[in-house]
Length: 473
Image (tube, rainbow, N blue to C red):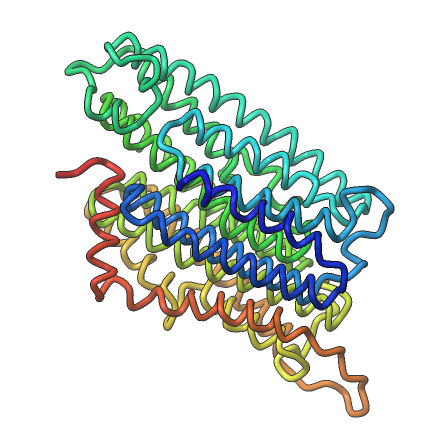
């Protein structure tokens, strides 16, 4: 059944090719994507709570990205005659990307998880370069090269981990299954355990875009089509952070937990500060949002580095809240791009009064600022509490500085692009597709709903899920 759920998005995309009429194919794409997303619910009871949470997140936002694409796909996303710049290929690559992310979060061992992350890299390379423009192709090449280096480091760490597990008495078939490693962890820490988990962390952190392995992220996220940017920033980065969480589980069992936590604190502190500084100097809306992703990935890394029940809960709440908020922001950027034919901040003004994109963008940026009524407000409060509880004052200070710089950058940009009224007699921008507006609005609603989760029964479940990261009793 797990295999069926993983393959469902790709199979659905292949089946829609049988429809020739544009309207029928659009309906088939949205309907089949909805069915593939609903199939993820069948994973309840078949995988653990952490995998189920991320699988639901992946499928929900991938469905919204497919819906957005079905409503707003235009030929200007692909300006060349290359095979990968054709509309049917776009949806096949999007479905492959979706299935690969499901493989990452539904796998029960590091071998399959690594295979899923590798597949996401291959699929998204073509999607990043989909437009065929020189800048997009350069971004795709940089993404492929740098992420391949990270993937290779993760593979080296996984092979070393397999050696550690087999030396500890695990059979080869279970040497990379995290449940088996935790259940049969040796009493004394194996000498290679720190090396194995450190290499895995660096490799997966490259895929998450953490500093100093972040050079590919701003270019790739800003040059991809808007719905792909939404998935790269909101979901793929979350999948990489999921892989880091699984690495923490194994590291804690093998006695390498303190080393991994220290590394996470350093990576998180650097990421938040550098991202905050870079956000102050951006002139492109999508590039600004890309650096915002780097900041929020750093926040999650800090939360995991602080550790403890509060830190792990903060990490999960932040991953969910950011996934919805950032997806909504990139969807809104796509709407603005359609309405104004540009995402250059210098050319964007009075967005609030001229289209749906500007209104949704204001809500999404408010969420990314960590303001109520959105879930990131809660997770950032939890982050501060976790930092104080752990006594890690220097990383906490770096994190707060980065959050403040990012807040200032987003507020300044919002005031500049949202305020004012269009000149009298100015041409009204073209209206956006209802499907695309609905997808962006639903993602924003998800970011808002996250704020009440910690005080509901779902919050209790999320707290229990967070405890799984370090295998707390």
